[in-house]
Each structure stands twice: as C-alpha cells, then as structure tokens.
Image 1 (spheres, rainbow, N blue to C red):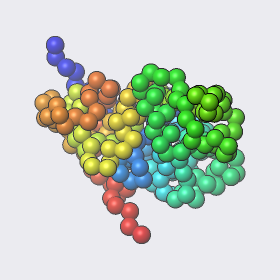
Image 2 (cartoon, rainbow, N blue to C red):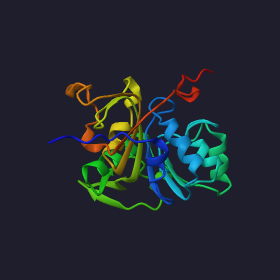
Image 3 (cartoon, rainbow, N blue to C red):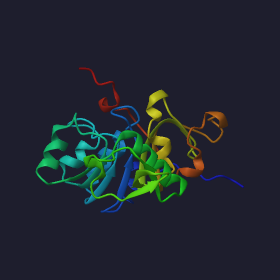
Length: 230
C-alpha cells in the first residue's frame, strides 16, 4: 500500500478551518508555536474561535494576532501574564478566558487524545479553579471532574516532517505539540524541513503520521520564531 503525500499549501488548508472551530495550538511561549499558521488564520479572518493554548504569547505574536482581530470567543489557557492585549480583552469582556493549571491542561488534552471523557484530580479544590465544576468523592477524598479537551483542529509546529506526516520536534519545542496532535479531528502541521517518505527514522518520529492530516512546508522562518530577548 502506498502511503499518501499529505503536503498542502498553507492558504488552502487554513481555509478549511470553519468559523466557531475549537483550535488546539501547540507551543510554550515561542518554542513550538505554529506562528505561520496562526498568521494565515488571522489573515483569512475566521471568527468565533475557541483557542486552547498553554499561554497567550506576547503582544504582536502568535495568537495575539487573532485576539487583536476579535476572532477569539474563548481562550483556554494557563496564563496571560506576558500579553497585555489578552488581559484587556478578558477584562473588557471581549473574550472569555478559562484558566487551567498547566499540568491539568496537558492531562486534559492527553485524555482527549486517549478517548477518555474526563480526569479526576484534587488540584484546584477549594480555589477559584473549582468554581462551577463537578466534585466527586474518590477513596474518601474530594476530586474535581476535569473534562477532556479535544479540538476540531490542531495547529502544530515541527522541525522536520516527511510527506506522510511523521514529525520530529526540536528539543523543548516538542512541549504540547504531540499531545495536541492526538486530540483533534484534523491536525495541520507546519514544518521547517519537509523530507520524502523514509527521511525520518521511525525511532525519531515523535508524532506518527497516522495522527497528522496535513503538512505545510514553511518557505521562510519569520522573526517570531527567534529567541525573545529581554
């Protein structure tokens, strides 16, 4: 059986993301964030989006382009502290924000990829993070029911990919990307280097191509991908 070539033009594949989609966005600050895909999504103007990301990037970077354009209805995130625009959008009621402890966010996404409905945890009990959430008793202890997270689309960034979608990440740029690649109906990967099938050793494929639907080769690396210096 011949494996398919999943490479596609960025404009074409981003156009398939509908208004109202829940979009999982890889990255931890700069490393692993799919900046090019996010810029194209901002340019095309899809609205009413629900974004799931570890952080809100910084002003003028990453998902901030979508927030500034009023395209984000809700953001599920661990912190906003580096993005004054995101904080203002939350405080002014222009964007709903759901905060989630970082480890719990990762586990909720992992659970979504594993087909689970929820996880149980005592993290957040008796804090604002528990407001409105179901609490059950397990072994005599109260536990929060944290629903699993899945996306209609996941946007991930890889250092290398082959045409079937096997992905390899650069060091800590791996972060949330493999989890998100398992937890969405459609997964779009941007890659710095696109190789022919077999170009990535099976042991080096950190996200197997079976989870990846589309691969976009980056023509250039913008300044957003550089190390942020302060």
